[in-house]
Length: 395
Image 1 (tube, rainbow, N blue to C red):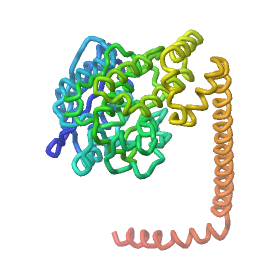
Image 2: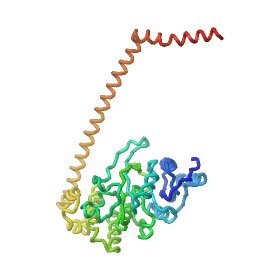
Image 3: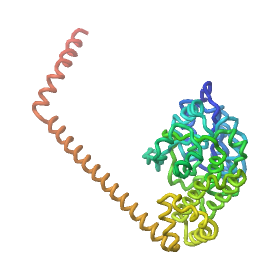
Image 4: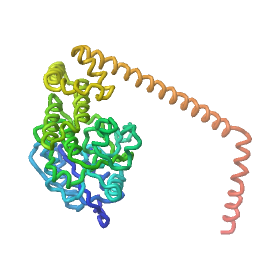
């Protein structure tokens, strides 16, 4: 990598936790170097890598002042991000995972938003890809047009009866955080959480914020299915533990009741997601028991305020753990049928296109072999040959 031109660098710090991801790290850092507007810095927090990532980062930082590296013993993604927050110098913070790719306009778009529509949290779109060829799946953000491109608050969402989980997913890499908000509210990643650390951090930030900006721009490319990702691990009860932190934070600010719509829906959303992705029977039973004992009364007290899709899932769970499994199975089977139908349709389109190509190829071959084409081609080429002949004689 050549040294990055930072003459127009803006006050955005990008924090990347890194642990043994040499396979994807180069593409990630290249995407940040290729930004159409340079950030202030890219902070790479090496979380005890042993696959060459550490040395790679040292060499990169020695050549390019855009990048800084901080080394630490392996302590997990939360500790790595906190180390980055402590070291960051920018007025705004972006998080990027080392196996993902940033859109070239990420920094420029976020900087423009901070300059002309300042907000504590700026939420942008993303897509997903499975391979490096960027065969992407777009992810819809929110279906309420009036929420885009103008700052709003959680209270405004409450007035519209829109739970926050419909506006933001629990992924820190799709949000730009104002540094002052993070520091003044004392928000940090909870280092005892192996997973769901994003959820706690984001919802604490949402509760503390006075302004939220939602952008339609898809500025982040999220890699699916990377088994070595630092942020992948069995969830267990970590999600419910993250909720404990969120509720404690809301109580400390005296707004648990004020934001109960959002809190109840995130409990419902996390419960349905956790049960649908449980690793085994033991984890599934633990999750059901935890929900029944601690969270079910709170969710039920909000009745119709719970999103209708989540409510249908939880009503199935009310009939018993097995009823929820049957419900989830039927829904997944319907999704699978839909995917198969789509795949069949795509294969049909490919077959039609291939048949058309073969037909055109045959017509092209017939044309090239025709007498009229050969005669015409001879007359087209004859002047050039005639000219070359005279040029040769002139020499």
